[in-house]
Image (cartoon, rainbow, N blue to C red; front, top):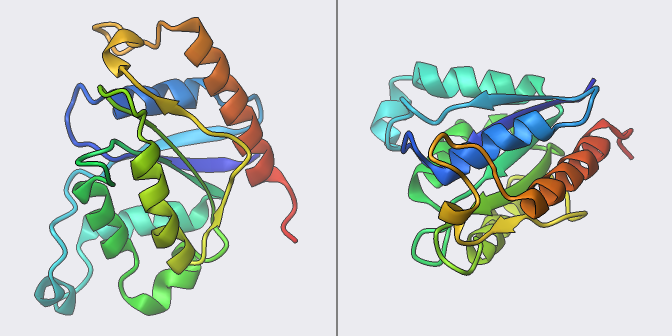
Length: 185
C-alpha cells in the first residue's frame, strides 16, 4: 500500500493549498494513503542552529518522509516563484547533506498547487524542478494540477466544490499513486 506524505507550502489556517492537500488525501485511490504533514514549527534555516543539532520538528518530518513511498508538494505561488516557508523546510530536510540520499534520493514526488491568481502556480511548480533535480528525487510528470482562482473552487469550510477540478484531482492522485506504487527500475 503506497504511503504518500503530503506537504502544503503555506502556514495559513485557511490556506487554499491546505484545502487542496486535504482534498487530495480524500481523493487518493483505494490502496494508497496520503498522510498530511505540517511545516509548522520548522525554524528558519540557520547553520548555527544546525551546529547545535537538527531541530525536533525537522527530524520528525525527515523520518516521516524517509518511511514514505512518495512525497506530494502542494505549493502556493508567491511573486512568480516558490514559497519561502516550503523552500526553507526543504533546506532543513537536506541537512546534513549526507542525509539527502536517504530523504530525497529517488523519492517519487508530485507537485500541485492553488492560487488566487489566474496563473495556477505554473511558475512555482517550474521553480521546484531544479531543487528536486538537485536533491535526486524522481518527479512524476504524468499529470499537472494548477488551480487558478482558488477562491471560486473551495467553499468557506474548505471543501472542493468544483466538479471539474475534483475529477482532475482524482485523476492526478490515481496517476501519482500508481507511479509511487510501481516497482522501481
